Length: 407
Image 1 (cartoon, rainbow, N blue to C red):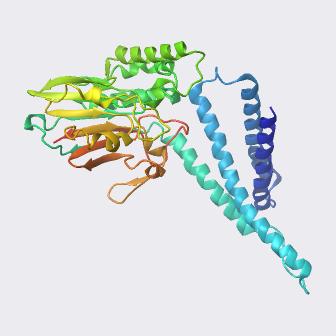
Image 2 (image 1 turned 90 degrees about the vertical axis):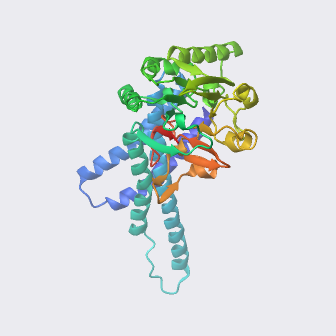
Image 3 (image 1 turned 120 degrees about the horizontal axis):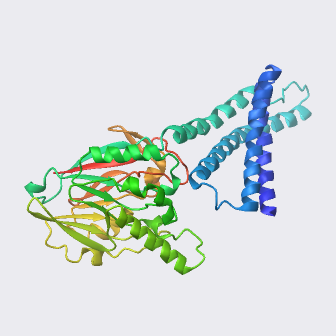
């Protein structure tokens, strides 16, 4: 409780400090305008404090997880904006202190030490940027699915397999969804592509298998000519939950496996599946989560998954984390022509203008973070993610359905 009170006191300080800019700029407005603006401004800290107190006292286990993330994100955005406003006002106060000292010592004091109207306006403008963009990203973009089409020229691809249509989904994160009807439209988009193969590259849920239960039938409608194949991502193991026992954690994982089966998806756990397509053998190799970054789990065993796939004319690897590609695929398994990954979400934030700019904070963490990459004749495709996690929206990096045509 003490930590909560300290945190609430800090938020109140930010509220009061940032309020100075608003009060200065609307001080000459009518009483009605000031009352509306002031009421809206102070409603946010009141609501935030109420939610924090109730969640601390009662917990949030029974709260709708999707809507809880939306509410938390709204408060985060509001205080991020206020923090930026307060930062610029701090610069203004430093200026005022300097002028005050000068005024005290100058022989003919004539300086104005009142708050700068220009800096107050600048503070509100700068603080308004995250408020506008991140709010827009929440309201408009979390279900604004885009089909990303990519033609991949694979090495040693038999002519009979040219034109094979592969759809990739990744990072569904069902526990974040709040609009089932929008998700259903995306499933229709997938089926309208008439894929030969559909691959899901991990993170079906945020934490617990039960998050997928309301969407199991919906995703079970996905159809592909030669089947739907899937793997686990780092979130699927339940490692980010304090389970009451190891038995409960194992039960959760078994439930998730059964959900894959009930949806008609073939879950590959460090194993491969051989298909006969157009007279050629195609190996679908699926590894459990493996990351070259220390903070993520390493369940994957590519040697085990690869075993028996050697004769296949086309080998496609499903590996959730793209760091696995350079760390364990390119040099050691040169005959794997294509690796499909996800995991990064493109950080759900960035700027992409084809042929001009492709930027996201994700690129400072992941060398390969979105789209197609080639090295030594091998290809990696990193899906930007179907769902979202943490921030319930996207800015610049939209949710993706990948359509890959092999050539």
